[in-house]
Image: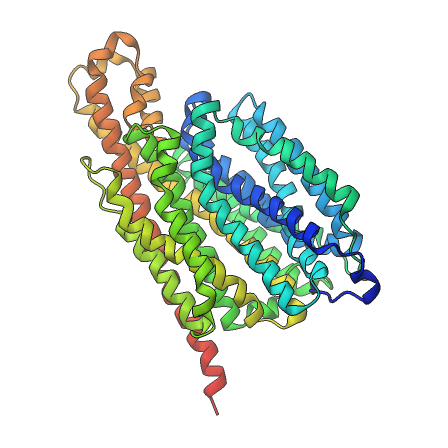
Length: 525
């Protein structure tokens, strides 16, 4: 399959309305990226509102990421065949309607199901964004400027997410992070329907729905295994069945891509070492530092007692440095080969992860500043470099496909990272809380029901706010219980950061090896 970056004919260029298209696409992408990062500010309140476990919080992120990963490439071909404007308007409609429904959710299960629907709408929008810009800006120089604006908007959304989310949650409650999408989405969909020009349709390119189903099934099974492994037991029949299903479905997806005449993904391109190196980095940076940011946010609210807005402001170092790096890396990218710069920037993300670790019970939020600055610089640089890599390791006619592939891989990394880091965070925090609870005198009188509620809240990162899990008649134990819960949150966060650091080191080494192999192809006689 090849998703082309097409150069329009003169007739179609006359009606392309480039400024309008760029504006609509930029607003849509800002909304999509914002809903990836803004939710970090709401997780603690969602946990408290629905009395949710860490599993439920993980799915608030993963239920959005998995459909986005699973159907993005499919919708890219669907837009080619049936019209990108039509798919863009449909995607914005689905995204907006699901946002309204999310604001009215009555349970965490309903919330997560609707997040999946929102992810499908997001996939439609992401799939059409770059192809719409390519048609609107047929000249290479103007197209490069438009894509630069597109990248800057993505970076700006990552900067605004924690702060805007924190402000909304603090002032209006967590439901407002979804409500705000509704009026914006209605305006964008209406203007696009009336004013956006339709791109030409490509015949002969079929949509690989089976490939999408296999990919979504494999990812969902794997994430379920990670999120439920602690509760079910890692060697239980259910957990092993989920792992087995994930392996089988993902293997079937890989086989199908080599068999079908219209695959989602050209596996010949994937076998190129340079492409493989870029893919490793795309998955790893989202699965480490970006995924860990969710638990860092929960930790700051629970253990430090910060409001969502205060938490968002304290996460600004990672967002601002990422924005600065993304805006300036283009100059360096022309001087340093991708095969050198991507492993280095992945190394920066890994170093940032390591610097975040070593949290003590007496630490305050300033402990995280060095890690956020170093990691943020790496994040921003990778975001910009990965876009350049899609043009470096693939022919021009496959640029759209590689861009969509990397977007898919980023969502895969986020989904698996949130699930994996969250599983370790939860199990470690629960073990620490159980040990600390057993050592407290008089705790046996609380009762097994309240003890279980305390352990569940501690495992979800509630920290000092865990006092809500014990009855009022045991208020004298509240300070000791808060101390136990804070220690549990510290141990859980340190464990998650350690795992992310190990994964980052491995990804950096594997990516460097892949790029080195790619370089050897050009110097061998």
